[in-house]
Image 1 (spheres, rainbow, N blue to C red):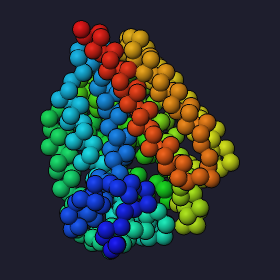
Image 2: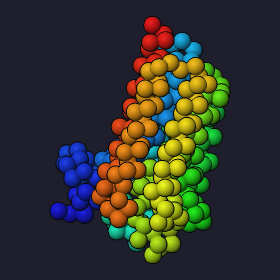
Image 3: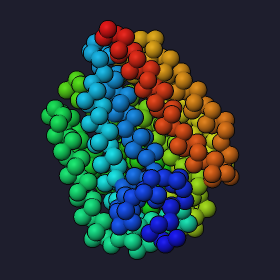
Image 4: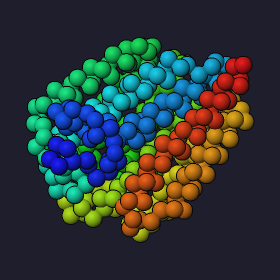
Length: 310
C-alpha cells in the first residue's frame, strides 16, 4: 500500500475515501477530513439545536431547508478549517505519530495546493452563508477570526480547547439567528453549552496524543487536567447540560425537549464513567459517540418544535 493509499490512524479502515475515491483526490479529501465525518457532525449539531429551538419558540416547524444548508456549510467550513490547521501545523504534525501521515507532512500535496483547496472550500461556504438573512451572514463572517486564531493557541494556551469551542459552538448562535434574525438569550445559552461540550469531548480526543504533545510542546486540556482529567471532563459536561436546561427554559420548550436533554446528559455521564485515560482507542470511540449524544438532544428539541407547531 502506498502512502497515498494508507488510511490515517483515526479513520475507519473501510472508509469510502480510502476504498473508492480516485487516488489523486484522496489527499484533498483527507485534508477536508471527509473520511472522518465526526468533526462535521460536531460542528453541525449546535446549528441544528439552536435552529430547532428557535423554530419551537416561534411556533414553527423545524426549517428543513436551513437544516440542509447547515449540512453543506459545515462540511465545507470544517474542511476549510482542517486544511488551514494542517497548513499551519504541518511541521508539528510531522512529529506526532497520529498526524505524521497527513497529506502535508507526508508530502502528498504542497502548501500551495492546500491553500488553493482551502480557497475553494471557503467559496462554497460563502455560497451557503449568503442564503441566510443579514444578521446571520454577519455572524458567519465574525467566526473567521476565531477559526484563524485556533491553530496557534495550542502553542500558547494551557487549554486551547476553549478556542476550539468558541469556533465549533458558533452554530448555537447561527441556527437561532437564521430563524429569529437576532441573537437572544436561548442562543447565547446554547452557544455557551456547546463550548463546554466541545472542551469536554476534545479533552477525550486529546488523550490519544498526550505523550507526543508533551514531547513537542503542544498544550491541551488533557495535559492541563492531568490526573484529574475525568473530573475535568465531568465538570464540562455537567455545566453544558445545565446551560442547555437554561436555554430550554428561556425558549419556553416543552416536555419532548427535556426528554432529549435527559438522554443527552445520560450519554455524557456514560462517557465519563467509561473513560480510561490510558486507553487511546477507547478515547477515540467515546469522542466519536458525541454524534449520538448530540443527535439525541436535537431529536428532543425538534420533536418539541413539531408538537408545538402542530
